[in-house]
Amino acid sequence: MQTRSVREEASLKDLSDGFAADGDGTLEPQPVAFKVQDLRTFRAEYALKDQDLVVHFFLPSNVTEHTAHQYRDWWLQKFPLLLDQVAQSYFEEGPPRLSAKYTEEMASWWFKAQGYDHLLNPLGYLEKFLVALDDACAAA
Image 1 (cartoon, rainbow, N blue to C red):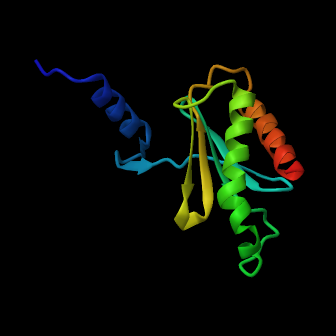
Image 2: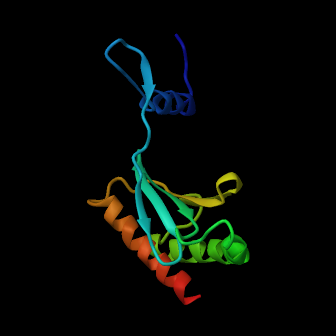
């Protein structure tokens, strides 16, 4: 009898959830369908992935290649502080349930709030968080 760890089982489930078979039995990856919202101080794409709320934050759409350098310090230093403060206040949680990382190749911030699929309207709840974060960023 083969014994599996809890982590291995969860990993196998994640793998199988990421693929779906088409008519001929070939596995095809299924992308996450993100919503996009342009706010005053950032652009966000977000979704409910499994049980978690996931957000990718980008500089606002009006920032160009030529003006991006003007936002560098704010984006790399001030934004993560505001994201941390507002997220912990709004979700009334902290690490490890909330996590964020900077993605250098995309010049974006990735944010995850774990275990919010039980809410009646998880994306509506997340959208209110985005507005609260945008308000805090605009006031800073």
